[in-house]
Length: 236
Image (tube, rainbow, N blue to C red; front, side, top):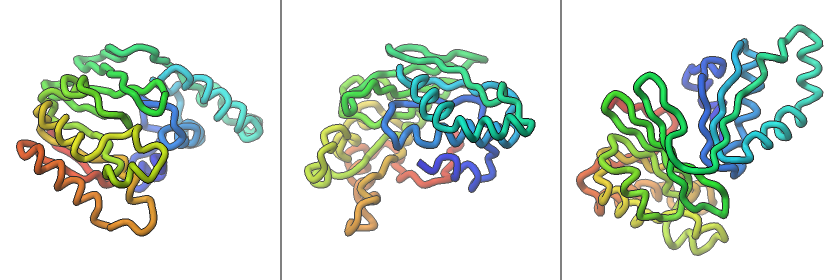
């Protein structure tokens, strides 16, 4: 959510995005994808945008973009926009392993459980550095090996155990304690806690994310633990 808005906030033109990787098909992880494709086309994109994601992403784009915005697309093409430049290419994933390898960089995936969906985590290795972007996920011992010695891991920490007990989807996510244990065992050098769902609910402590980070730091004192914020950058 707000991905396209944040690209604009930080002066990153949507039409310069070269690839998109989708973890799973929950709405909060795909709702900006049609906007990204439409706006980048409207702003001058002249190549098909590659989209990699779980099986079902092609169907989402066909129905959630091409059909849903058919009148908009017809209007713009009738007034000079080239419909070919709206197009995208899709690589649908149904099993884990290497999904992209170019110019000395390798991206591979790990499937973990999350709400019954096909759910992919991505690991980028390039120039002797490793960055892992975790999806929403239940705890899984294989996450430790997937994140082994990573320079940077972005991992969800949606809320506390107490908070999860109050929502029907709490079992789909990892607690701060579980995140800390997995990152400690993996030896992750830097960890960014993201997907901070608990802060979107009313009457919560505004410092709850820092409290969760403190829990992770206590368990994994050997790593640098950050709370995610829009616009953060890391020099690896």
